[in-house]
View 1 (cartoon, rainbow, N blue to C red):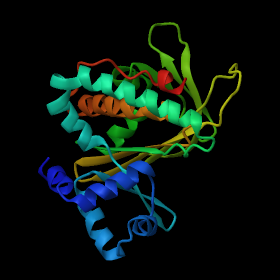
View 2 (cartoon, helix red, strand yellow; view 1 turned 90 degrees about the vertical axis):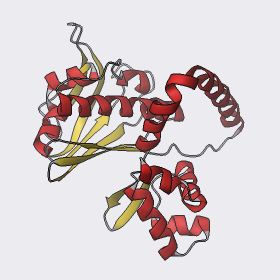
View 3 (cartoon, rainbow, N blue to C red; view 1 turned 60 degrees about the vertical axis):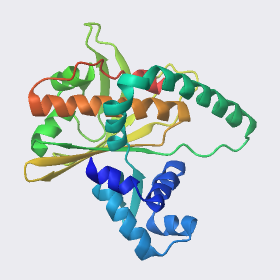
View 4 (cartoon, one colour; view 1 turned 90 degrees about the horizontal axis):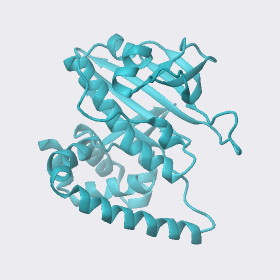
Length: 264
């Protein structure tokens, strides 16, 4: 937590986070151009933000894309804000959302929906994390739905209810699998949807280091800001549950995230 407050204490670093909040996934060149900042200076600030886990770097070929990681700020919110001011802040947030909806309606060329990236660190092996991502019984424990598939490229996967009905609230396909390090899947609309949208894409990247695993979840090609708002609340909840299950053997005392509500 000390690294987070130190990183946030500098106005230049806060400005970098603001720019990533406006447009996530920028390269170093793009950030420097927007801030009129030398590459060396920007690199030093980004290194501090990355060490504080406020910025995540995802490689795409030869490029390094920088994403705002909300995990540490979420922890601050849970520790110092939720228990005291959540009802009032939720009311303010609702007013803000309604104002933004009116602004979007008046804008014929709304800005693209940014991707969402979340990073968490888990005291477990890469194999244990991979099993937690792909085992139907384990996903049912920390997600509230069983994710069912053979997890082979080209196969389908289903996000099934655990109420005995066997109904799937989300379906998708497996794009890429490289156990225990990388899994890429799509979220797709149901076949009977009136106007099916292009699938969104989720990438799980598992990077082991001794007895710690860095798990990065990237959710891209989001259809609208409403879905991004939903998953920005959902992914922290489900990944916190996964982390608790692997580290303690039990899940957190909270309702699991119902992914289909964010995707509807």
